[in-house]
Length: 203
Image (cartoon, rainbow, N blue to C red; front, top):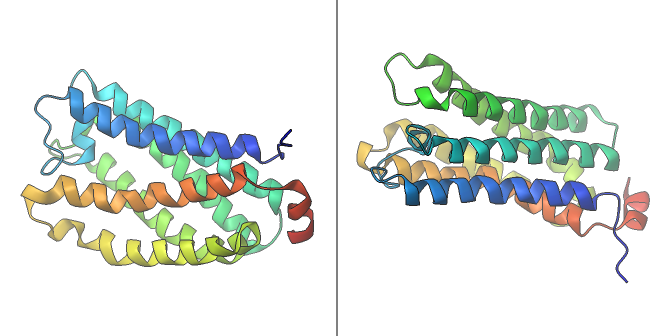
């Protein structure tokens, strides 16, 4: 009989959050008759009667990030860079919840709150990758490389979004946001399969 570690629950919650935010986008596209995923941004799904689907996806994703912060803190609770990185997980989660609450204003003139929150989220994710990369290698050797690669791609791709032609906004934004979901999904999987005995030797 498989023995579950104390990190299993946090891995499950983290992975559930990643699945929920992707599912929210897919279901929202399917139900939102006027939405074109190639030209319309993700935030535009929040407008209309089905907007709650995407908002719930974002909220569950935020819960998943909270869970990852707790799980990773239980694994290692020292080191300034590491603790700063875990704090960024929490700040990202809070920002996502705020974005979900203000999503109904996305795309409207003067929408400074939504735009500001999105920029904050982008900056937090960039810093997160480089702050926790070294500590992640103790969770699994491959995670350091994964974090640095994702951070590098994010640094290259995210700033180009304003330059993308309007007809391709949605496709490019979704491509870039795959990175933001990929990192917590991979970390969640590693926590899900983690061994308590190994964590004692690694910490």
